[in-house]
Length: 451
Image (cartoon, rainbow, N blue to C red; front, side):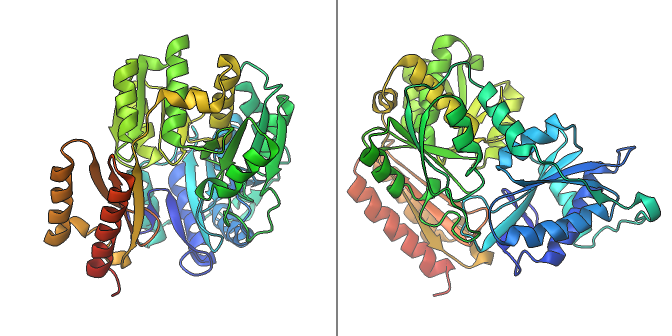
């Protein structure tokens, strides 16, 4: 991982860390690296979420792309996975997304997809970074008629919705579905897709104004959807994040169904109908211990990678697996898309409910989830990778692991996008592990923070 690129592209406060100048350099450098072997004028798509800063960054990014001769095709506001899919559909040479996903509105980000719709490997991002930071120079820039230009596309939403609908082979008539669009990129696509499939759809947080994205809504703030599902008597609720590459669910009783549970439910159904490749599900080290136990009981191998959907995808491609994801709701159905896709995941989940006839709460019983507590410790940015170098912190973690005797675990990791260290503890007693997680987070903040 480089100086600029984190686990999911470049992130920062828009017009501060992520300036228009940086966006211009990123566009120029990214287009050059990704298309330098293309023997024709490169075609590059740009999609964005609903943040007000998206227009500013898009203008700067577009200028950078055009400066190396690219034909730039702006898609407007579309989910991140739509850009991945449409890059393939339109046979573009690359796709770019302007989004900070689940982060607050003041943040924004830039991430690339290659011509096959996959997120970039570390070595490609490192090469782009070399050009952005001036460690390498682009020697020849086009002039005259070879300078790039912009060509609008007005069918992106419709094309993506049609694709998402095509990923299931049943209608959803009779299902009452509440959706929370996080005032983000799914505000058009999710409602349209579910409505076309015959579901009775009720939406909340689907009126973006440029600053309300993720504001106490969406997959990171589930409370309003939980209340809404029960108040209107919905069969199920679906929550997306700001760029709609993840989803979480709510059952008819108002209980949250997280990514681990969605994956378990879908993996179980896919195994039953013979579509789960190699009877394997790929998850991360942050997944609940209950997912591993579920796999052992159902004859499903649960492989684990380090945190990040890009690492889940790498393992899926290596092993020939078609289902994987994260507890946070980044779920990859590789038969359908090359990245986490909130809408596709929601449709697979709803299709499973429709075909089995189970209520969401009944289907969720396939996995027993152990209590899990996650607390963020605020640290100095330069200290967020140093937590296990400190003997006091290391000793505290090992002591807790020893105390749990295999019936719990401690996992600490740095945030990929923020100056935070995430402390996760799992065990049988929620009150006790909450106390221990708070103590450990306080220790990390005291040693590695600004105090």
